[in-house]
Structure formats: C-alpha cells, structure tokens
Length: 235
Ligand SMILES: [Zn+2]
Image 1 (cartoon, helix red, strand yellow):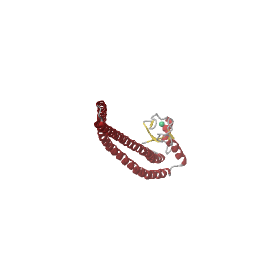
Image 2 (image 1 turned 90 degrees about the vertical axis):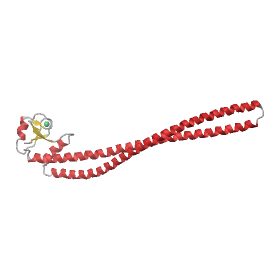
Image 3 (image 1 turned 45 degrees about the vertical axis):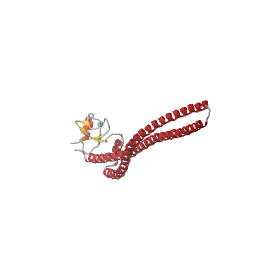
Image 4 (image 1 turned 60 degrees about the horizontal axis):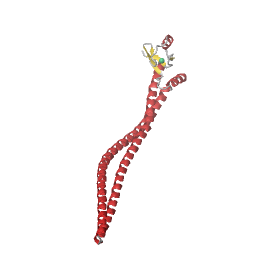
C-alpha cells in the first residue's frame, strides 16, 4: 500500500501534470495562431500576384490597341495621299507603304488575339484560385477564432489547476516538498513512481536491497539509487 505521504505526493503529482499540460497547451496557442496568420498572409499574396498577372495582360492589350489605332491612322493618311498623287511611281511607293502598314496591323491584331486568349485563361484560373484561397483563408480565420476562445478557456482551467496544486501541497511538509520539487523540475521526469517486480517504475532498473527494505518501512520516503525518483510499493 502506498504510504499516506506517497498518496499525498501522488495527488500533487497528478495535479501538477494537469497544470503542466495546460501550460504547454497555452504556450502552443500563440504559435498556432501565428502559423495560421502566416498562411493567411501567404494566400493573400498569392491572390495579389495572380491579380497582378491579369492586370499586366490588360495593360498589354491596351498598348496593342493603341498601336493598332495609330497604325490605322497612318494607313488612312497614306490612302488619302494616294488619292491625290498624279505620278505613277509616287502612287506605287505609297502602295508599298500601305501594304507594309496593313501587314503591321495584321500582326498587331494577331498579337492582340493571343493576349485576349491569355486574359480569358488567366481570368478563369484566377477566379478558381481566388475562390479556393478565400475558402482556405476563411478556414484559417475560423481556426484562429477557435484558438482564441480555447485560450480563454485554458486560462481559467489553468487558474483552477494552480489552485488545486496549491491545495495538494498544503498537507505536505517542507523537506518532502523540497525533494519533490527538485525531482519534478527535471524534464520529462515523473517524480514519484511505483516499484514493479523489484524494478523502479521510472528507470526500470532493479532496486537495491537497501531501497527494498527502506520502502517497506512505514511512511518513509525512499529514492531510487539509480535515477533518484521517489519509489513506493503499490500493494
Ligand atoms: Zn529509478
């Protein structure tokens, strides 16, 4: 049977573990929120980049349209000049210019068509990507809200856990608490462990005969001579 002191220590250890788990969850909260915020920022940047691509294509289309309009003006000018010339060679020279300008317009119109297809394609991709990213952002935002709510809940749970730890420390004397605190401060260490089959429940090494006999005495605190945890017999 665990001694009364061991029972009190086990109660304290149990409450301490609950408190530590709450503290760990509270530490993780801000990290998770920051990670979700980072994802939102990245997705917003992705939307802006896609929008930028579309805008660039629109600008290119406008430039081509201006170029076509200017070339058409030149064409009209050459055509009206051609109506006024009397000499055959001048007429033919203008004819060559006109053919040249018409070819320029044709090429520009082809280019414009390509840009228009690209705009359609990009728009389609952008709309789909934007919808997807917005859904994803909404998901991250919901997660952030949930994490914030959870943090509030965890804070009040932690306060209750701290009070319950303090209550569990009350009945223990100073030297026992000192020993327990020293052990509990070591990372990953349960301070108080049972003995199973003559082995320490912490380090799993066989306990010495001295430890064995000491633990059988009434209400005496004994530590494992291998790992220094407080050991006790369960039954
Ligand atoms: Zn041990």
